[in-house]
Image (cartoon, rainbow, N blue to C red):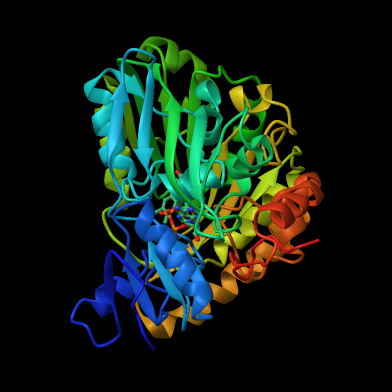
Length: 440
Ligand SMILES: Cc1cc2nc3c(=O)[nH]c(=O)nc-3n(C[C@H](O)[C@H](O)[C@H](O)COP(=O)(O)OP(=O)(O)OC[C@H]3O[C@@H](n4cnc5c(N)ncnc54)[C@H](O)[C@@H]3O)c2cc1C
């Protein structure tokens, strides 16, 4: 195999760096690409796409490498990696930022906070902006400011011919629509983003836990689903239940006293074992939530949209799933709030399909030893099969390789339009992966 034509830093099997370079965030992913090319600019990306086509070596695109199912790599593929493209420019004159594709979330939050800006990104410090925004992007500011994709003003993308395209509301508006919710790995390699920004100073950080408290666990999702529909949009929450308890993390763009009032029904759940309700600079809140992700694991974590109110029986069934969990602490059912500003934008405004969902439900488990893997995967499968029946549609950023009819699941009624855009921008299906958008 000749690697002439590839520019940037090329890592091949046998290179001392290969083993580190081939790995993804999820330790359960174990693939052997034919080469990894670290790109430093759009030229390197274009060369990589052209090289892949000329040499008939299929490609995968990687930025932060956090895809749950490892769709940013593959055995025998060329991995086009943008993680070295991580410049951030802040334009205070028009409250915008220009961000390169491989930028990780914590450096982005930090840089923006130096200028007094918040950002509606996700919670994990090492997720890259690309996968996040191209799949929609949810976090603890979502109900106030919308999805990460809702702040996107423009993107630049290298297409299958190695040409640079700009996508915004005037230029390639169909591509711009598609990139905001369905852009990960489907149409080309996005290299640059421009976002609109909002100012924020201090916010209230909320971290509550009910440990060793199965009673609280059993009540939690019932109370959550009654509380969420009328929730003040200044509050967003990622919460969950595990075998022996429950927890809630949230941001509130307001003062702690008001947060306490809003949290009334949640704080009424008996037996709180940890209570943090603190007024802190936005960046401190981001860092404290980010500290949760200190350890990398092997895991699965499929996520589904919830549009309905569960019955008592359905809630009991979720409790039974938790009773059977393989791990005391590392298996959980999580709930991530939507609504608020997500719902303000119509379902057709971007490719993110589930604007009217109340929240996302995730079943997740992580393991350290290979011989535990099957147990965890079987529990996820059984739990998922139940959750699948009571939910509608899957969040593309929380993928699961066993999702039935995955294109329909990820994109719901937006799928036909996405397939037409796929035909227009990638007619030879150069950008494909197991759960990618297929040609019509
Ligand atoms: C610990 C953890 C916490 C998370 N927390 C959140 C959260 O709070 N909110 C949330 O919404 N999501 C969250 N996620 C999910 C995350 O948004 C997705 O995994 C996201 O796709 C990761 O992006 P990445 O660039 O890091 O990953 P990658 O694996 O590099 O890419 C993900 C997908 O996008 C494609 N892609 C990557 N770069 C590009 C590019 N430049 N152009 C075109 N396609 C590209 C890849 O081919 C792949 O299909 C979390 C994930 C993890 C592991």
